[in-house]
Amino acid sequence: MYSSLMTGAIGIKGLDLEASIDLAARTGFDGLWFDINEVKSLADRHGVDHVKNLFSSKDVRPGGWGAGARWQDDANRDADLEALKPLAELGAALGNPFTTTGIMPANDEREFDDQYAFIVERLRPYAEALKASGVSLGIEFIAPKTLRDKFKYEFIYSMPRMLNLAADVGTGNIGVLFDVWHHYTAHGTIEEMDLLNPGNVFVVHVNDAPVGLEIDEQQDLVRTLPMETGVIPVPEMIAKLEAIGFAGPVVAEPFSARINELAAVNPVAAATETSASIRKLFTAAGI
Image (cartoon, rainbow, N blue to C red):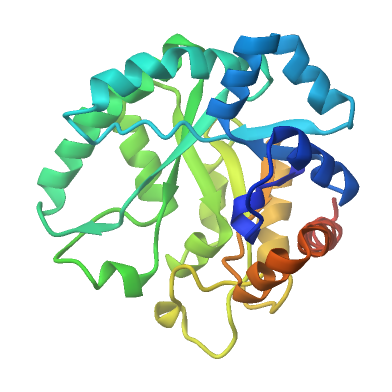
């Protein structure tokens, strides 16, 4: 596994690809989570090798991308899936044959079984379109009870049940985006992570949780850098992922007001502190 800088996740705004790669290199990241549409524009103008050279010249890996296809939107899905093909092919060419999406853990429209059928029916063509380009899909399970309680009908919010849904879609290229905070707020265990393998987990988000709150009191979008509080057993989770052979990007997603404020005035300092937190995590996990 390797650290990947996601600039937006720590409040850094306005950097183009080249500047973001430079920032990742300067602050100790192994990779960079990138905007696939920006990269596609550069590749169309200058060629894929030009993009690869932007990364390799700084010894930074292409460290993941999100497709942004509106696969649940019946009015826009077909057009988005058509536009997805060259993006997926480019992601694979850059060494990132995976992308991610998320599924809300509750809704106001459909009870569980109806929502399950709704999601499976719409997820299948999305996964099939990615598979045609050799790309896998990691679904982020979203867990906090404080979010689920805002809606009428609860849906899937844990890693084991999301893997079951992936199996029911049946395309063979769906796994999870594993976020340690969501696993924690789902009351997930280290033992449950034995369900994971290199073929069903593609991206990992790391963070920590504020102190002084019970698990079911934790609020989405209020987190800290990994290792900052010690509330979540993140080193144990990362050690488990290492043991199963996970080799993908590890992205800090702290949703930290403190880090965002720092990034607004000193993005290098924000990225440096974030990189250091991941290195500290890897050391604690024995990596």
